[in-house]
Length: 183
Ligand code: SF4
Ligand code: SF4
Image (cartoon, rainbow, N blue to C red):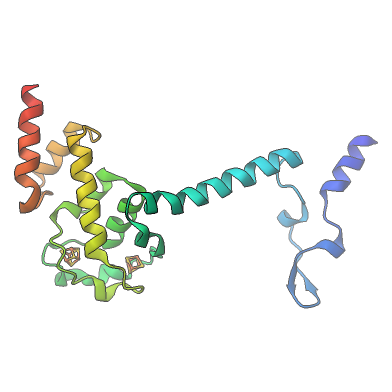
């Protein structure tokens, strides 16, 4: 009996269904439950987790000096840069996302360390992000991560063989590889 009562308190009454348009309520199986988890507290915990990860998505780029990356829609319109990119980088959105989340290996593999920050891709971005500035900060963070030993050495060697480091960085990375080989 008590169990039945507890179940019924979890169900939304018809009159409390979300309003889609004035006078029209939205009926959905999933939203018919007040708490989507087993108990109210689990539900609160899940909502707290979702809230915290969304907040991190905003706080992290700000803390790492990349606040503009938050505004990227990930629409991929910037891929239209094509042969206007002098370094033949095809995936500018990848560079933006990798910078935002601090995925250095992905940044290198998408050609980010070859970017010369010419700005040709900016006019293709639907929100006119300052892509050269974002990519420059991304490059700086990759170099810091390499020198701090936070990127596996074999991934760096592999990237060197693939020619993924531009003229601006190649000497510094080669010197680091030499030093760490002797160590
Ligand atoms: S800023 Fe970088 S990615 Fe954009 S077109 Fe220039 S070289 Fe290519
Ligand atoms: S066009 Fe701009 S907003 Fe869209 S994915 Fe590229 S960088 Fe992001």
